Structure formats: structure tokens, C-alpha cells
Length: 280
Ligand SMILES: [Zn+2]
Image (cartoon, rainbow, N blue to C red; front, top):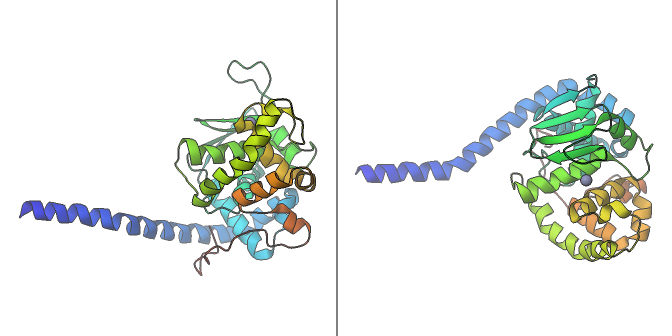
């Protein structure tokens, strides 16, 4: 008899585990949304001042963007190294992560609990050249002056925030596999069918818009492609149309569609979010 009870209990736990987790997640999201509403104007004022991408979105998408930014920020610990902390720093860093994953379902880059903001270029490990940012198992590292320059378009083709978030997105999907986005993983395979031959040709000396650094290894190729996809969109599509299309598919968004005046940037239809919670 006892064994029957134990089996029934184990089965019950296994069967109820997912619905209970989902219920808690939904309640937590509702709770976060209430808090977010009180802060929405503040987030809008900061992000709209700095992020062109955000200003091109429609109103509904802007709200979804702000709420995701709020959720991303509140899922991280931010650390400030030799730089004076301001309220806009964690918001803008979170916003750039949200920009990259805006077409995807999963956006928290959840393996990374810690984000380190440094003042400017820094030295790391045994490397002789200074770093603008990097990602390793301890967190995401960004130098604030380079981050701002990239975000404001002062350094053409270079956006260290998007670059490092690109690494982090690949990391959570393929290395730690802690936040796998079904669409991203499936399409990355198709992306590589187009990207690998271009990368291989670059390693043999072929030149293109992505530049020599993208030929360092396939990780850098991906992160540089992410930067140019958003920062030099028109030229990217003109010079590397197949790669552009593959990027657009894997990230499930097309920055050119809103540059041309169409504010709907998400490529596929997503299920409607719950009524009271705008989106996650
Ligand atoms: Zn890199």
C-alpha cells in the first residue's frame, strides 16, 4: 500500500510541477507589472532620450519594450567599478539587451546574474590589448564610455553593448543551455548555413563590411554581425543580403522595416499576451 502512495505522490509532483511553476511565474509577472506601471514614465524618459531603436517602435511595442527592460534590470545585480553609478546606467544596459532579443520569447539572459560596469577600456587576463567589454561565466562586463559612444552612434559600426549581449545570448542558448529560445536555436542552424561559408572565406583573407575582427573566430563573427545588423542596417542588407536575411530570421526582427516607416518589426505572430499583463 505504501508503495502505491509513494508512486502516486511522485507522479503528482511530476505532473503538477510545471503548472505550479507557470502559475507562480504568472503571479510574479503580474506583481512586477504593477510596480512597473509606477516607473514606466521614468523608463520612457531615459530610454527615449538615448535609444533610436526604441523611438521607432509603435506605442504598444514601446510598452512591451519598457516592461521587458524593467524585468531584465530587476533580474540582475549591477556592479560599478571606478565609475559613479547613475540611475540611467542599469536601465540603458538592460534596454540594449532587450533590443537584441525583442523578437524572441526569452529575453532575460538568465545565466548572468551579474553585470559589471567599468569606467573605460580595461585590461583582462593575460591579454595585452585593452577590452571594451567581455562576457565570461562570472558575468557581463561593459565599459561605460564605450557603451555610450556605441549607443549614441559616435563610433560607426561599433556598439559594445549589442556586441556583448550577442555573446551572452549565444552563451545561454548553446553553452549553459539555461535559457533556450526555441525559435533562436532552430534558426541559428539555418543562420550558420549562410554565415559559415562567409566566415570561412574571411579566414582565408576575404574582406567585407564585417571587418577583420569578425574573422577572429565564429563567436566574434556572430557578435560583430549583431552590431552591424542594428548599427549599419542599410549597408549590411545591400552588401550581404543573404546574411542580413538570416540575421533577421534568427533574431525574428527586421530593423529595416521600421526605418522604412513600418513600425511592426516582429516577423512572426506571437500569441497574444494575457490581458492584464502587457507582455514579458
Ligand atoms: Zn566579442
